[in-house]
Amino acid sequence: MLDPKEDYHDLPSMLRGKAAKNQDRVAVRFPGRELTYARLLREAERASAGLADRGLKHGEKVAFLLYNSPEFLTTWYGTNLLGGVMVPLNTALKGDLLRYEIEDSDARFLVIDRRLYEEFAKVSGSVKLERVVLFDHEGKYQDLPKGTEAFPELYPARGLPGDAQPPLPQEPASIMYTSGTTGPPKGVVIPHEKYLSTARAISTRSKLEAESVLFSELPLFHCNAQEMTLHTALLNDLTAAFTEWFKASTYWELAEELRATHVSLLISMVNVLYKQPERATDRTHHVRVALTAGASKEIWPLFEKRFGLKIVELYGMTECGCTTLMNPPENIRVGSVGLPLDFVEAMVVDDQDRPVPARSKGELIVRPKRPYTMMLEYYKKPEKTVEAWRNLWFHTGDYVWQDEDGYFYFVERKKDVIRRRGENIAPYDVESVLNTHPSVLETVVVGVPSPLGEEDVKAYVLLRPGEEVGPVDLFNYAAERLPFFMVPQFLEFVDEIPKTANQKAQRYMLRSRPHGARNYDRDKLGIRVAKPSR
Picture (cartoon, rainbow, N blue to C red):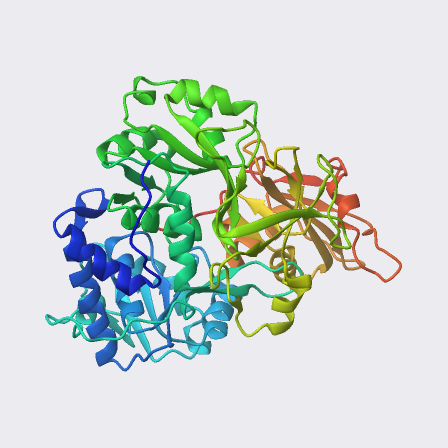
């Protein structure tokens, strides 16, 4: 079991220290490409020099709209070497949501994958950016769109001078957007200390060994890949491995190609992998540990037996750490999300924040034991920050219960956020788009159980009097304006929406309804929602 001993508190100091220690050891691995620790630092310093040449200063923001790649990592670290702040954007964003997050973050620069430029171009006239740097994964930089510059120009031959001052532990390393229930997405401000304290704590419960390779097909714009895979590997002098996206049919072959020993999986990925036809490669890989979130106690032992590995179940969220609770590997309880990691306290409370007895359902609340080990704030949203931190505890919005030995068990989400395939979806965001359709009077969006685990998105639609619109047209309207993962799986037309006395929609009543006569399934209608081109 590894446990990192170096006492790093900011990402640049960690990167420099590990490069000096490990030099030619492989730090990050992608199919067909590797970067050693020394090369990772050298390329980050070049990116930092390029950003400095373009006027980026301490505390200023650089937005990323990139798929997983070595360039994502070197540009991120290059930003941090200057004391700059990375703003990683979901690659599926489009329209008003994309415009909002760029504008809200106050980003000066945008680094964007060429395959995503078409969607950005639709809103580029309404965002204030000083520079747009275009990255082409095939290295083709001819015929650049007007107003962009080629990514290689960001990397001068020289690197950043060695005397650049590292940021303080409490200063922001990134701003990551997460869905809100009643308003626009909120920017979670992540300090440098949080990245390292979370990864350090994960290390102690991950069954790491000296030659472990941590593998993730989750996107680097999420905290899971950043903390559980990347920084847990680097802190322990190991290798982090990534691909651009998850592909179930070749998952175990890719894991073996990248020499993975540890993988990170969401519940939807666990279920999809288990439902694949049995193959000889199910056990020919070298993966021995799967870090998962949401694995049911029914599938847990079956998955372990079929794929020849051990599941370590956990719980986390962007604000308080991609992993906040985690099973100790020497004493795992099937069905539990484990015990608090060493940087947090956790408690189960009622609606008045009073502790509830063992085995009673309540909301999970957490708070840090050490400074700067959780989010600093919601960016430019002080009232939302105060609301989340009421009574000096962070309120997760999730129902759990705790057994007599302190183990936590996830029950359900208290707040209205829908969890689909690892993405948090705010009903507000989907409703706002559907409500702009000229035939729609009002929409209420809820999560409904999915056969793959977590939830699917369902929209209850009330049309304007005398108006008509077909389900295909409304599905297509949503698909043109929403990221693919937000497009409803189901639409149901209703004659009324149940409401409280103060006219708030009673979502719990809609969630518990069976599908009605005017319910439509996107798949059964033959509508395919395209993911961003790659």
